[in-house]
Image (cartoon, rainbow, N blue to C red; front, side, top):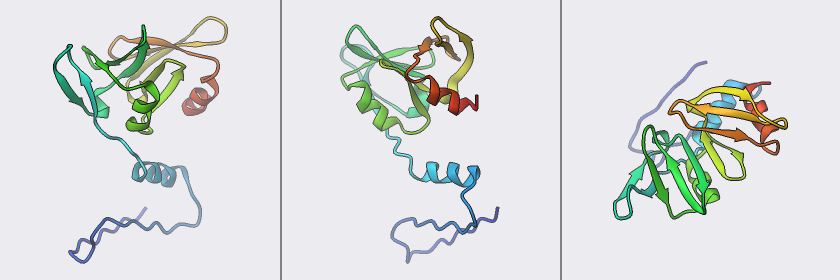
Length: 145
């Protein structure tokens, strides 16, 4: 693929044009990257300290006892936002795997069969959760199964 960048003060905002005869997987990944809407997430480290987490610092977001819990590499945080709100902020690198869980696809470690047709997903930080049957087809599509 040929790439050309023209840097000039006459451009007020970035503008991309792709010339192609068809949309390939590579082109689609580029388009997805351009259209990402990832933004930082605010969370509570403890009951008082508000911190800012970048999407790549987040392994999993899960609803536990009515609270939204954000799991990092070795720490967890609480958010006041609902799961769907965080999902909208995090972008395409995250996938909902159950009614109460979002995962960062970059941090998947292993998958094992679960009960009733579900899969148990293990993340690199030790967290694990089931991929429910509702979200299983999309998850399998992502994995190419």
